[in-house]
Length: 207
Image (cartoon, rainbow, N blue to C red; front, side, top):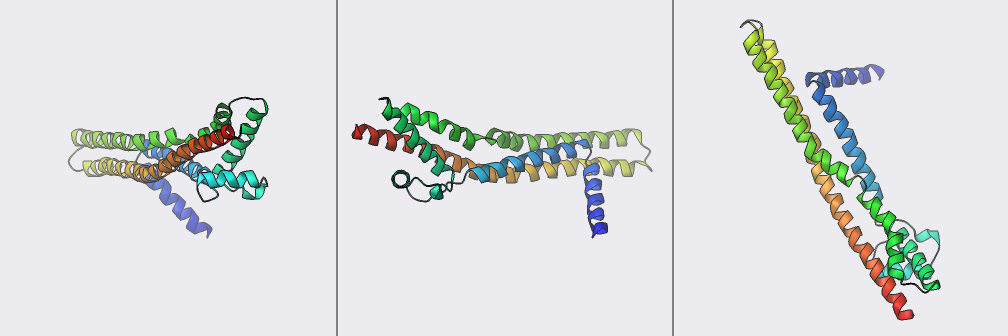
């Protein structure tokens, strides 16, 4: 078992070193990308199914923590609490609700910029590795003898191909999953606005 893991480790190190320093940069970008995607996937869980209006009514009738199963549930709870506090002092509830929802707006947008930046940056870093590999190839053609230059040329082309491949491997899945999570973020933003409208309108009618 240990020998098998060691063999995979050595193979991984060989593959990374074959692409030069750019490969390690892309590897770090890949780790950051999937950390950001994983965080957004975990946090962007809606919770209780159903329309926002029904969810608000459900939380008004039941105040126990058993129905707090997702981000939207907690957002509704805090919004209702903010509306009650505003109503108690005779203030308009909408601004208080927006204040209560602000932390949730921050949560749904967290790491969004990081993911988009890495998706855009990874192919460019891979292209940089391609350029470095081709420069090494041309240096080998210029400085090496006809007999000895074969390995140098192969190494330069290999480095160029490795970095280009890894740059695309990082960017393409990040683009796909990032776009799916962006859609969820947009849905949350719309539902937060619905929460503010429903609660503030209902409270104004009650007054």
